[in-house]
Length: 479
Image 1 (tube, one colour):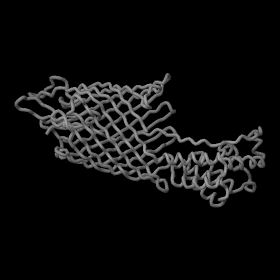
Image 2: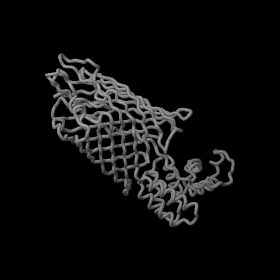
Image 3: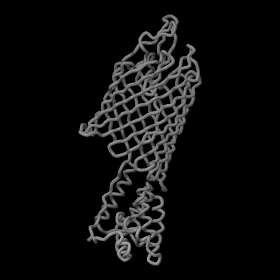
Image 4: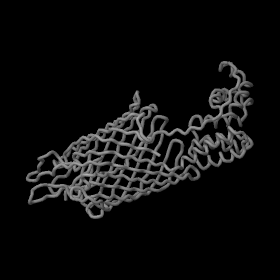
C-alpha cells in the first residue's frame, strides 16, 4: 500500500502500480486535510454611553491638596458616587496617606473596589462590591458599580440580574436608557454568530502531480489535472450564559469545494460540536465533544457524485487568554476517532496540539506566531504520520484604505512505514499566502479579497515532490 500524504492545503494521492502500463496513477485520492488550529481572537469592544456631569473645578496642586483632607473628602465622595474613575485615581492615593483617624473604612473599601475595576482586576472588584452593597444596600450607585464589574468579568447572568433590579429602582430616563444599553449588550453576547465565505478557484495541479516525466525505475508518475470551481464555508456559533460565568456552547461548521469541470474532486465536510465553557474578562475555556462527516467524489478514480467518505468523532479543549492588552495566547487540544466507509486501512485515531501567540500593538496591525503538532494513527503504517508545523502571520492596515495579510508556514511530515516501493516518506512542506483588499470596496457588506498562494512539497519520494502557484478571489461576511 502506497503512502497517503495529506498536505496542509492540498489533495494527496495514493499511488498504485499498473504492471501493464508501468505507470503510477493516483488511486482514491483523499480530500483536503482539515485542521482546526488554535485561532487568535481579536478584541471586540462593547461600548455603553455613560452620562457625565460637568462640575465647577478648583485649581490646586497635588502637594497642596495632600495637606487638605477636607478637600480630599469633598472631592472623593462625589467621585465615588458618580463613578468618576479619573478623579478617584487622583484622590484615593492621597486619602490612603491620611491618618487612620481621618479615614473611613467604608470609603477605603469603596475606593479599592473602584481602583480594582479600573486596573482590570474584575474578580476582586466584584467581591469587594458585594461586601459593600451588603452593608449599604440603599446606595444604588454601589449596585450599578457591582453590575458593571460583573458585566466586565463576563458574569452575564449575575450582571443581568443586577441591572434588571437597578432599572426597577431608578426613576430618571437617562439612567434607564443607560441600563437598557447594558442589558442589550448582555443579550447580544448570547446571540447566534454566523459567518460564511466563498472563493473562486483555478487549479492547475489539483491532483498534486510531480514534474512531468518523473520516474522511479520503470514506474512513471501520473499526469497533472486541472479544475475550476469554488470553495465555500459557513459557520454558526451560539452561547447560552449560565450562572457563575459558565456557558453552554453549540458550534456548527460546513465547508467544501465544487469544481464544475472536474467533479470527481468535489468534497464537503460537516462538523457539529457542543459542550460547556467558562470565561472571565481575559480568559475563555471551553470543552466540546464533536462529530464530523465527510463526503467526497473519490479523486482521479472517482465519479461525479459525492459519497460518504469518512467520519470522525472526539473531544476538543480550547483556551484563549489575554496576557495583557496587546498579547494573547490560544491553545487547542483535540482527539478524534476516524472511520472510513471503504478505505478500512485508514481507520485509526488522530491528535492535535495547536498554539498561537498574538501581538496587537495597535488596532491597525497585528502579528501572530504558531506552533502545531498533529498525528494520524492508521491501521497500515505507511499511511500513519506525525506532522510538526510552525507559522507566522502579519495583518496591516495601510493608508488609502488598503489592507494586507501575509502568512508563511513550514511543516515537517514523517510517515511511520514504507510503501510498496520501499520508501518511508518524509516531507518538508512550505506555504506562503498574500492577501490584499480595499476597506472601502464592498458590496452588501462583503469585501472582496485577492489572494496569491504558493505551496511547495519537498519530499524524499519523487512522486510527491511538487510546487504550485494559485491566485483566487475570496469573499466573506459575518452576521
